[in-house]
Image (cartoon, rainbow, N blue to C red; front, side):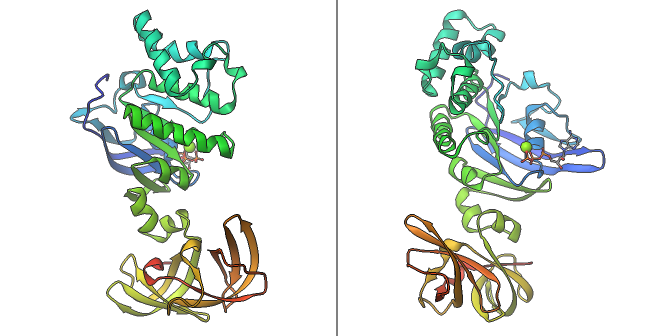
Length: 352
Ligand SMILES: Nc1ncnc2c1ncn2[C@@H]1O[C@H](COP(=O)(O)OP(=O)(O)OP(=O)(O)O)[C@@H](O)[C@H]1O
Ligand SMILES: [Mg+2]
């Protein structure tokens, strides 16, 4: 499977069950050559199962996997030849950084001069040239993870699979490594499937996101699509729509709806065609503006104010007592009354 020039990697109805539990339910996904796709969802939603099925580490219980017109789900992992990076990077502790990276090339009986050249190149890519002769125990967590990534990409695999590779790192290193992975992808253009439960990581890295819930796809789209136009309340709440207000639809015209309840009345946008009855209005804290800016406003009482540098993160109460969250650069204090406004197109109304 040394052919990197494929045009698509296709999952058709890929399913995996454990006894009577279905961890993955008919995943359909077409990944273009050189694309960076993130599988996103909470713990237990089937992300690693999907990745392990792709890698060949776990047989499917249904469906098929294709690279262009070649079916690959019957092939053992080594014949798929995908690069893999896991959360615990499992470097060989008794081998130098250089030897760790060279290991796979040696196994593949690559000529010595080529190994040296390719390892040098990989070291340079992950910026570890100066650490080549150190042992893993002498490196920081981020450096060790970079060795793991270099080890995976040095083989120039047709596909790189990464399962939460940054979750063991501290916040600062995570940001640095995120940039590193993005840069590597820009440089090498390797088709990448990246598993994470961190929406920010997925949004910042991927060309497309696949949001999973209980083994089922909820939405597939670009970061912009999934962020701004989630298809249901589950995706919305997962993508940072922290306010999920339970209200009732009292008017509808086209996709425009009016939702009301407990002293709140808002114009919103129905995202799933819902036009009457109980609904949930999803609003991001950062889409509220303090002040009577539009007719679409709510009266709130400020309860808790957190300082976040340029902005305050405010937790307040609606007239009916339910919590509401917003961000502002206005100086508010606990106990203040305020009016907050939100554009109707940023009030996304879903089935509860
Ligand atoms: N070997 C197994 N035997 C039985 N059940 C399993 C096995 N592996 C996974 N599962 C179950 O399948 C479901 C999906 O697991 P999976 O590891 O794919 O989740 P995940 O999305 O990767 O979660 P996390 O973010 O916690 O890593 C879970 O309910 C899990 O308990
Ligand atoms: Mg997992």
